[in-house]
Image 1 (tube, rainbow, N blue to C red):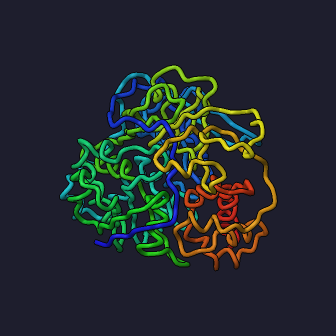
Image 2: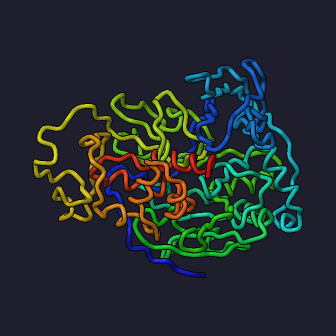
Image 3: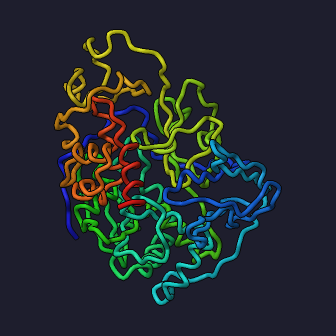
Length: 451
């Protein structure tokens, strides 16, 4: 086991942390699968309005790989199919019927998984729809199941703002987590890497006693917990390599698939943020309504984010959480300009660059809203990007190469190693107000298609 101590990064000091308690959310009246939650696929419907589905029934699949199925988390009826510009598929809404009807899958014990052929495990994951919980590096897309990964990486160290408590996610699911790890070990000829926080004494036994994995520990500010940062330090992705990543909640669901013989779509979600009605952890299912997860009346002046404030996805109060999200953050929505802006020495505003006095109070928590604090301006090299990206790359040079479409330079500067979430802090600290995550996603798509 190796320990990595990272110095670069920044922990956002934001109010609204969730309490270390967990409760069951009400059963959702409906769910909505959104193909936009999955990068690298072209969706095609398997159902139409009025169709009855079970939990685990296919809703849509990928045109490029028909084995990639996206399944319903509940049993019920397809009541709406929403489309956007040029009829792009956006959401498929399934109304619950209150039954526990579900697709049946083979039951395999945790120990027997170690002797089960890879094809059997892979086919069950594909049919259940749980395979799409994996993410591929490079490109941060849904993997091609026909390409075996070099290695599989799991991060059990959550450093994002107001993130969920990994111990609450694992509580009561230790056996399922180990079964999931056993299944993952059969999907690669390489290794399964599990990373967690160094020096933490209260970690779940599911992590500290995990078998059939290589364990590493990390310590440092965000984004030390990002799986892409961990891959860079443990075993970097090189040209031609394919690795898969997955989060602990999905590992648990994979384990339950084989232990129970039915697909499991449970999520422990941290409801956090200054505008959250109550700050807590709730147990719900994937793609549940925002209002069901939040549990109470949502303030109209709040922005709902499925994920954290740095890299999450904005959702309406009447919308649905993202497929793989373990966090729902609510912060104040601000649409007005601030008088005098940064000129006033405001002690209640957090600033990375010491523009405000917040650096004098390192333990104080601050209110953060959706204010942009200025407009886009000349993109200048300040050296700040390098201070929050703990990787051996040049982030400013990479972003600029993407902006003018130099694919060869993008490769040389490390685009194959990164995902948008790894640059999320750059968006927060950028004095030029450059949307680096959007640019990086465009660059990854450009390289994937033409590189």
